[in-house]
Image: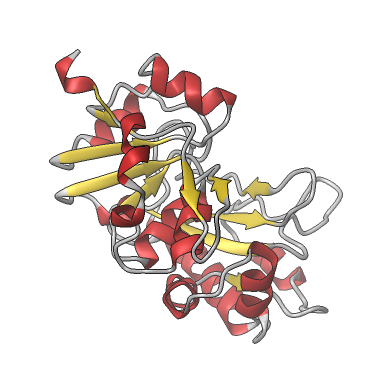
Length: 246
């Protein structure tokens, strides 16, 4: 197993050594990010876009089966932004490739990672207060703003993932503001003491308009400040449900 972890770290080093120097700027533009906090965090976390023409064939020579290639030999993360997935100790155990196409996310299958048993960002555990999001970028954006946040990488959360969350003293679940997310809050499908929010709208600065917020990623980018959650208008907090009293 140590050899497997070493090979994963070797792959991660290869990605970073061959990264496109403009990759983070391209990602910021594509996702509408503009804060230096987010830029710096993405760089620090190791999010990369490989240079065009990078020779990835040498990765096929790894003795460990890390499944970076399809059965036809195609590199699965070609042209995608590569995000490392880490374990409790901070060691890389898999990778996610993101691009705004039909698939959006491609997760590399490894011996050490299964979505239903682990969280994205669990290297922060245990911690005092934890925010649990659906999407990877939701959690990254919260972390860039100074919060501990993980992602379940989907709309559902497993029993095992909930147990990992309980390593924190206070847990806040933040499903997306869509039909599935609203049902999650209404029926407490994540089984957490606090679930926030659906139907959330925020006022646009210097305007009479309001916008609907689908996810925490949009909210963080909209305010671009350290105390993101404190900038939610008080009249929107009626959508925060304290389920400990139910």
